[in-house]
Amino acid sequence: MIQSARTALSLTLAGVLVQAAPPLENPRHSPNARLDAVRLQAVQASVDALASRRHDRLPRADGLMDLRSVFHAHAGDSSHTGGKPEEMLAAAKVAGVRVVFLSDHFRPPRDYMDSWRGLREGVLFIPGSEARGFLLHPEVSVFPLMEKPVPELIPAVVRGDGMAFLSHIEERPDHSMSGLTGLEIYNRHYDAKRDFTGILQLVLRLTDPEKLQELAELLRRFPDACLASQCLYPQAYLDKWDAANATGHFTGVAANDCHHNQIFLLKKVDDETALLGTIVDKDEDMRKVRVSLRPTLRPMLAGKTNGAIVARLDFDPYERSFRNVCTHVLAREQTEPVLRAAVKAGQVYVSHDWMGDPSGFDFRVTGVGRDGVMGDERPWVSGQRLEIRSPLPATIRLIRDGQVEAVSEGESLDHPVTRAGVYRVELWLPIGGERRPWLYSNPIYLRPGR
Image 1 (cartoon, one colour):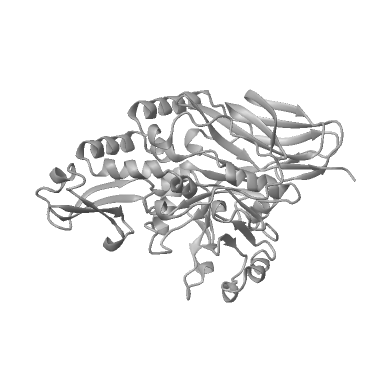
Image 2 (spheres, one colour):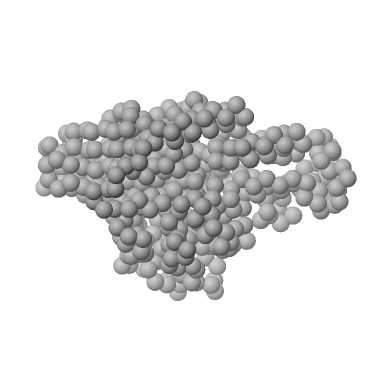
């Protein structure tokens, strides 16, 4: 949030080859406006009402398990990471996360492939790194190549069942997808970076005793909705993805980008000055706030010793971050080789699980020719149908080549396929008086017949 405001953004995607599918509607409320007690109460009421309407599906006929997973996860790997691996494991167990794809920051001489690997208390850890603008998950160490030119590094990473994903799309919208496994189609950090108004309002709330108390109470009562207040439709990411899939096959994953470092602190310097930042900031990097400009600070500092923590608010514990967004992988077993193969095949969907449990979602092609699921490529032939099933009543959007092909309300959509294309699904839910994006499927590729 505060640190993110220092980063300049480029939000325009150049060279997009398809017409973008617009969001279902512009958000009715800004991220900051969503941090209102009445609106947060309405959001929670919507989530509770949806949960009461959810019904469990029978086991999938294809035998695939829905494994709740997270990509782009940091623990104990940098000076700006607040959490530790043991904390992440405990949170994963509470949140029902079965697989964690780690993204350690590259910090030689340590090799990130020496991070946690394998099953720990029911959670599978797969090592990897966020480096050079990518999420890298090689099968074996590529440490000697990490500082080589990207055209030399990426082929080494993806060898065998290795994977490489383009990260932080807003920072490199024109980057080539050649040789990559896929890309992030949602990134939690991107939402925070573009919420400039929210950053300013956070400063004002943290330096006013009444507003601070109100915010702390809202965070206690509505933790998931508060963190998710910044979530917007990731248009730039989806545009890049649709353009890439027009001629290729690229798996879309979610970036939790979780560090457990959004614990905001207000620290007294003296009776006239405070520092505002996070637990990973050094004092010299924190924002100075003076009583002369913010008189509401005076009673907060009065009677406190210099250096004392005056206020502390924790926005992003791992458990909450994991509920905020997940990457669900459909796989036959919870082992690293099987998970890698499923992800590379595109048997994946992304969802904001805090809004509702998406397990049971299904998207497949049936009819003439071989049936297929997410990630499958089939020749298009007349008589095929696309079948979509949701465990919750939702607005179902079927997207073809980046454009809206069909829209339906309810728990299912059966759609006759009349032309070749790359088809993916979005599900939107009515949450607190808004339609908000809930789920993004990977595509089914129906290519022109040969």
